[in-house]
Image 1 (spheres, rainbow, N blue to C red):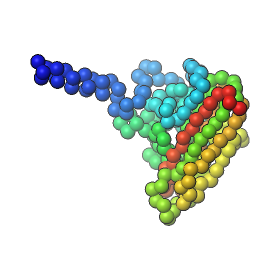
Image 2 (image 1 turned 135 degrees about the vertical axis):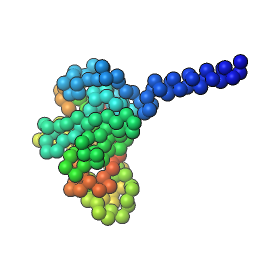
Image 3 (image 1 turned 90 degrees about the vertical axis):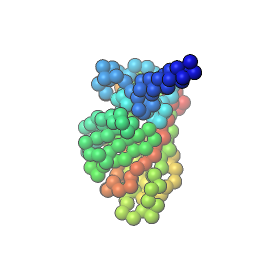
Image 4 (image 1 turned 180 degrees about the vertical axis):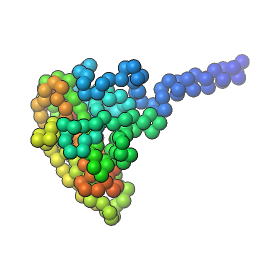
Length: 207
Ligand SMILES: [Ca+2]
C-alpha cells in the first residue's frame, strides 16, 4: 500500500509539472492567443509589472514583446521560445526574458504596454547593465528610452559600458486607451555585452 501511495504521488507531481509547462509561468493555448496589438485589453488592473506579469502570450496583462529597426511605427512581434522561456526574434541576439533583455546590432528590443483605459499613470523603472564584462573592452554601452512614439520620447538615457549602477527612469504621464508605452533597449552602436536588466512598474491614478 505504501508503494502504491508513493507511485501515485510521483504521478501527481509529474502531471502538475506537465500541465504547468516547462517555464512554470502562464502560457496560453494557441486557440486563445491574442492577435497582439489588434486586440483590446480585457481587464484593467491598478498595477502592472514586467517581471510579475511576464508570460508567453502577446498581450497578457497588456504587455507585448517587440522589435523595431528604425521606427516604433514598424514593430515586429517576437516569438515565444517555450523551452527557454524567452521571447526571440529573427536575429538570435534579440531576446526578452522576465527580468533581462538583449538587443541586436540593428534591431531594438522592446517591451510595450498598451493602456487599457484613459488615465494618469505613474511609470517607475530601474535599469542596470548586466555586469558580465566589467572592463568595458569592446563595448559602447546601451541606450534606453521610454516613449509613446518616435517623436514622443518620455525619458531617455545612455548607459556607458562600465556603468553598472542602478538607474531610475521614471515618468508621470497621461495616456489614452489603446495607446502604447514603449520601453526600448537600443545597442547604442554595437550589441556586445548589452544584456540589460529593466524592472518596470506602471500604476494607474498616482499622478
Ligand atoms: Ca552596446
